[in-house]
Length: 467
Image (tube, rainbow, N blue to C red):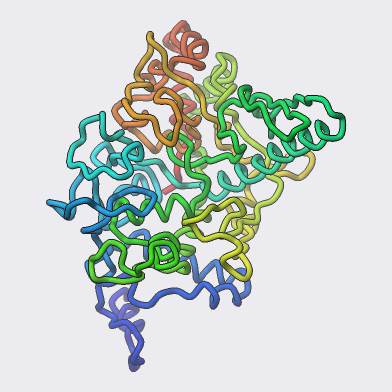
């Protein structure tokens, strides 16, 4: 039956502009963002997610523009000083033919094993290096993408609330002629405080866990990428050598073939949107339901202990989301990533129509409770006694080496190994590696009886990505 269906799909005459049904190319017929924008929302979402999954799982080939012989892996378009010795490598990349080469455990879009680690070298954007020496690059494990649409929406709402607080403080300082201090908080998460002065200046020394512009950037282990689109544009160039037109095209670089591989305008805005929407609509992680009684009872105790010892201070069980309408491009995009001003009207995908979002609980005000077990805030989680999470030699985007965004624990039972390098083999190791702001919770965990620690592990192992 499968063969018959496949043949049926290929039946009928080909138009001159149709791709050959046996073609290995993924980007043969670009997806038109303008055409998608004219479709009803449900049809647009279906078209985008179908195309996005194909692009995420499929393997890019030479004719798609794979490789970047004259461009580096840098986020800012940067020429190489000399041609790469090896086109594909595990160092400066390209290092994968498909997104799912790394994001594949337990399903497409998930995490990756240690063998899928990447090397991040943003501290040296103009360097041409062929080394994994930690003075030139940071080694990172692959994060899971399930539930990422809800994560981005939470970050957008929190950004608006924090910036509104800042703007109100500035207005009051100008009106009163006196400094105005305001606490920065959103959805129960504190980000320190600011002081606004009558001349319009800001004292930002009290800001905690977020950049001074108060834009919350929830993606990457350091919390430095603000949107799935930015994350996707970066990854296409770094990992595959596929240059998105919106950053590497003639508008910004003066050429339609910045990497000089002979393939111009490699991926357009429509196909990037397809990848973004597919990721944004991936179902959120859930909890195991087919547990034996002993595991179920231990997990219940473990969840209570998890909160009791202080882990839930940062790994908050849920954050409220007021609107589930996902817009692409995002409202806080900057130059080099498609922005709202670059399109007639942003795509709007209402995630609340999806079954997995409908199943989530709501609070008394009707807000969706997103069970991420995180706070979308950066924390210092290493010290001299427990340096494991501070063992990098390079900062990233001006974020200190021992500072990382709180990992969302939903799905943690499906994403071993652990830590930013994926070199911690068990959850117990990962908990014991915490230091810095997490020292008190770590000590409380270590000081518990073995049976109680096992209960906490049982709880964490019950949080899974559904297959």
